Image 1 (cartoon, one colour):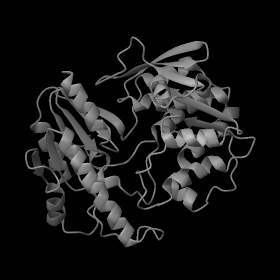
Image 2: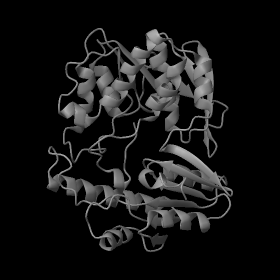
Image 3: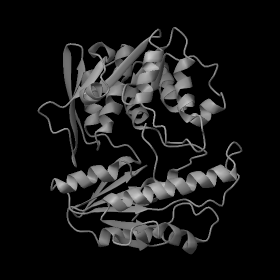
Image 4: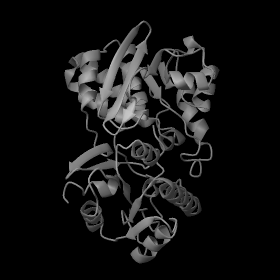
Length: 361
C-alpha cells in the first residue's frame, strides 16, 4: 500500500514480504473459529495478489473473492515498468462480480474516480476526515472514518486515532509508526466488520504492540532506535518532523541500491525499461534522502554482478555534497559504524535487506 521508492526495491521480480494488513490478519487468524479461517485466507489473497505483475499476466482473472481490497493508487509507483499501471490497479475492481464486496480507501484522485465509476457495485469505503474534506467527499461516501480529535496522532512512539463506524467511535493506539498505518488498520477493521467477524477488543490487543518484520520494525539499543523498513518514503520526512518537535536527535539512514547485472530476472521487463526504472528510482530516492537525513551510509544490498566500488561511487555522487555521507561496502560494518557513531536519541533508518543483519550485529 505504500510506494517502494528506496533504490534497492525499485523492482521486485519474485516475491515480497507480507503487507502490514496481511501481517495483522495473520496474527488474528488463530483467534478465529475454523469456519472463518478459509474466509480470512481469501482476504489475504485479495490483499496480496492485486499487484500489477499478477494483474498484467491475468493470473487471477477467473478467481472469485468474498472481498477485494484496494487501499490506494500511486501513479508513479511503477509506471516505467507498467505504462498502464493505474489501469491495471483499477482492473482488479472492475473485474468484480455482483456478489463480491469491494473495500477501498478513498485517499487519492484515482481511487475516488474509481469509486464514482463503480457505484453500482457493492463498495465499502474508508478514509480520514482530512482527506474527505480535501477531496470534497460527501459524508455518506465514507463508511469508516479516521480522526484524531484531541489526540496526538503520531509520534516517535506510535499512532493514536479513532475509527468512526456510524454511531460508534473506537480508539486505537499502536506502536506502529507513521500515520498511514492508521489507514492500514482501518482497512483491516472494515474487512472484518463486513465479514461479520470483527472483535474490536481483539483487534485493539493485536495492534497495540505489534511487530511486523521489515515494516517499521524497531530495535532499541543504548538509547538509539533502529527502524527497519521496506522504504524511506515518507518515513524520512516524518522522522524530520519528529526531530523538529524535539522527539529525536539526528536522522540517520543506511541504504544501497541493488545492482543491474541480473538482466534475466523477468521476461516481461526488458533491460532498457529496467535500467530506466533503476535510474529514475535512484535519482528520486537519493534526492529525497538528501532533503531529510542528517547522515547517510551507502552500502551494498544485492550487487547484481556490477563492480562494487563503481556502484557505490554512482550512488554516493547522487547525494548532495553538504550532507554527511560515507560509503562502506560491507553491510555488517555499515550497520556497526552507524550504531557506534550514533548518539542518544538518534534514529537509524535501515533499508530492509540490510536490516535483516541488524539483530546479528
